[in-house]
Amino acid sequence: MRRAALLLLALLACSHAQAPTFRVGSKKFTESVLLGELAAQVAASAGARVEHRRELGGTRVLWEALLRGELDAYPEYTGTLRQELFAGQQLPDDAALAGALGKVGVRMSRPLGFNNTYALGMRESEAERLGIRRISDLRRHPALALGFSNEFMGRADGWRALAQRYGLSPARVTGLDHDLAYRALVSNAIQVTDLYSTDPEVKSLSLRVLEDDLHHFPAYDAVLLTREAWAHGAPEVAHALARLEGALDAPTMVALNARAQLEHVPEAQVARDFLQQRLGLAPSAAARSTEPRLVARLLQRTREHLTLVGVSLLAALLVSLPLGVLAARRPRLGQAVLAGTGLLQTVPSLALLVLLIPLLGIGARPAIAALFLYSLLPIVRSTAAGLASIPADVRESAEALGLPPRTQLWRVELPLASRSVLAGVKTAAIINVGTATLGALVGAGGYGQPILSGIRLANTALLLEGAVPAALLALSVHALFEGAERLLVPRGLRGD
Image 1 (cartoon, rainbow, N blue to C red):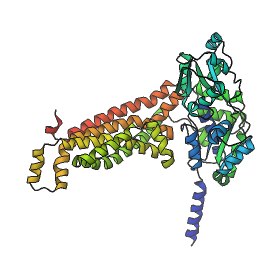
Image 2 (image 1 turned 90 degrees about the vertical axis):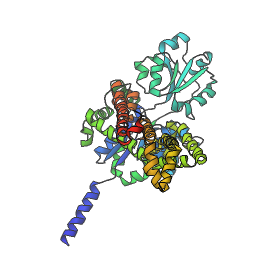
Image 3 (image 1 turned 60 degrees about the horizontal axis):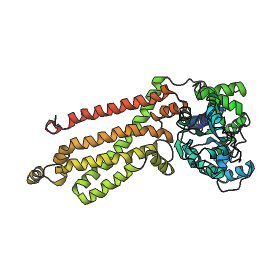
Image 4 (image 1 turned 45 degrees about the vertical axis):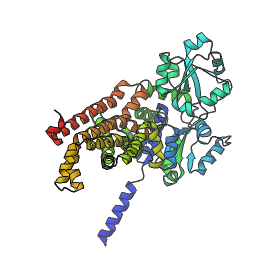
């Protein structure tokens, strides 16, 4: 009886220690990553276990993840909520906006203290030469090349609404990554781009922010969105997060962005220093831990990348080999199978990932599903081609020996087609190694994570930290299958 009581107490203690993890997300730009890091460290200082899922694509990805309960919080902007997520609803003030969010189980904090509105910018010298100070001045220069972030191109308050409001009809408008747009602006590949008003590049690159003389852009006050259900379950952590409300004015946010973006100080350290200096918040043990060393980071990324590639390839083998046999045995049906798998191959990788999110959420699952679908065609086609190339007299000999169809397949046909099958599997594996880098956009990790961060921070070393291992892994996969071919394919079929 006494032992049972002690065991019960131990279980209760363990359940208390294993409190739910606070999962905070951030979008794929530096300010969002910083705000996510601030929220994570404040929650950690209040005793919560935290997980910061950083650089998870754009607004829709994080919003849907929050509604599905895959995230507990993420930083957002009131303008984005009104213009993008609640477009068409009359929400004249923050109280009305908070009410709309409450109806879907989301709580909005008070503003964090700064307004990061959209703006258009040009190089100061170019704007001065052309006499452009206001957005409406762009009407006199339709030959200018405009380059906007991909999200701005598709937003309800983005390019199309802006062009309609100002009557702009430029000859060339291009969508590109927000961080790459600054480099294009400096190289004069484009002359106008969209800015966030707290971007440090506005000052460091001497850009002119064009006056929004028709007042198109609304206020974009930064806020923290949290799930109501999570906030009720962790009131002490939710109370701690309220310390961020009003704590960040625009100059402070610009300085934090500059430190991370231009001085390449890790976001975790930037957030830790701010919380300690401005809020007097002692860093938690987790926040005090240093950035993992290069070897540790590589091992973690390699493990994540191999999981994405290995699981998806194994699943594809289990499905596509039977489909390849079916395609070889039933040529008409095989054409439909090849057409179907070929159609999947035509769907752009990013689009496929986003389409899978409503079904599978964020993380490794949508990435593995996308890689699985992309692996089908090479294996099905090579299996069918390998089986179809077996000489008829060989099949007749097998039948003459009285071998049943299943035995013919396993003992005669598949070994003879093994070289072709292995070539298809090798192609699928190498494609997967490269495509898996996009999985970082939905929180799957892998080598894509440092690549995305390197692009965002214009940090070549960080970019190479993901690109070089991905290339080496692709070469290793190629060598591995070359060795497997020598081991598994009879010498007479190898052609060497």
